Image (tube, rainbow, N blue to C red; front, side, top):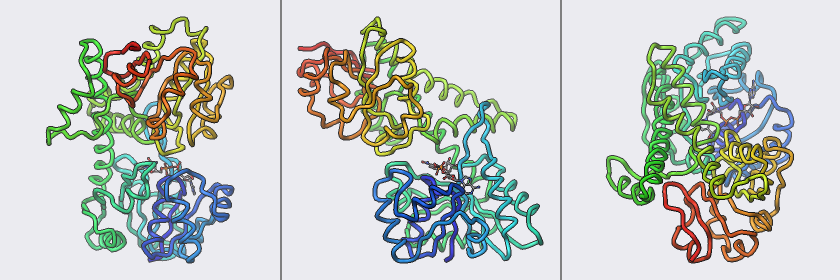
Length: 436
Ligand code: NAD
């Protein structure tokens, strides 16, 4: 099939590469010339395990190409995927300007029947809006259909998630239109939900909001555990073994960040409000999440005051492990609060430091290793649970620190082990421990 994917971000680039790998002819479009030039030169604009190999293999085989010419790409395709950004406005509403711009351009370029597939996360009703914008911009009336095919990939495992999704959701106006997508996805042999367009759009928000609610729920339980002297990791195990609950997304920590959960929760609250329903539960989910960074910094302040006399090492900047994405990263909030309190900050992240530089205060020192960050610091703060941090040489780390104090925002280490290793160790929803 001839496919065009508009937007070469985390979703568009991975989708394009996977469809090419399945044997389709794929042309990926982006409006940023430097991005397209980099991709043509074999350089990935994002960090995603396995992506570079998949892209270069399919470019070499002639199935995958990149362009800034949206019109030409649309004209040579049967199916057009839209995977542009849908950020939120200050009031939580989704900013649909990128989707609307692309719909207008698709309309202008449409010369024969096409299926336009919306992969961007968009509020219920947007499929209808896209249909209307395309029709309005067509130079002459041409038949087309709009389909919703929301994306569920996770950054850091995007290729794997796209090849083996839990489900593929297809919201189409008719069974016949849905079959185009069924055919495209058939080689993956994964469960498919074929439904109407609005339901598909709601499935995406409901799923993300539910996962965000699980995270905020366990973080609220962590607060209770801290006050009661209980251990949230034990509570989580006890809850997670219940097959009705399950252990996924029940890790207490600094809360959720990234380009999806925060904006999708806000968007669903806004959409519900517009439709006449006050989604109080979700407003609380967002509120609990907002308090996480302040909660950690309050713990640090209590243990180390005055912060303006302290040097602190921060490990992990990306919003989660295995990505360079800094959008809505908790590190930004934690570092802003510590910087405002006058602390001197030294930071390290395996992949995200280049992206972090634009978002962190100019006074922050970027280090080449966790040990360099820890050197001479009064405490170490773990913000993102990269796997490599799990396997740090903790004795070497203790030797580098001026004081052996750790604030673990993700419960990466075991308190008893940290105590034996000679650390004062503070974590989330568990009793702090003092060195043996
Ligand atoms: P992104 O910001 O990384 O990429 C979007 C790309 O679209 C950018 O490269 C941008 O230059 C390009 N673009 C914007 N307007 C364009 C235009 N007129 N013509 C051509 N290109 C244009 O975004 P992303 O993270 O890939 O997310 C895309 C959508 O998928 C969003 O709606 C997001 O909510 C959703 N989503 C993201 C993830 C994720 O993990 N990142 C997961 C599931 C769903």
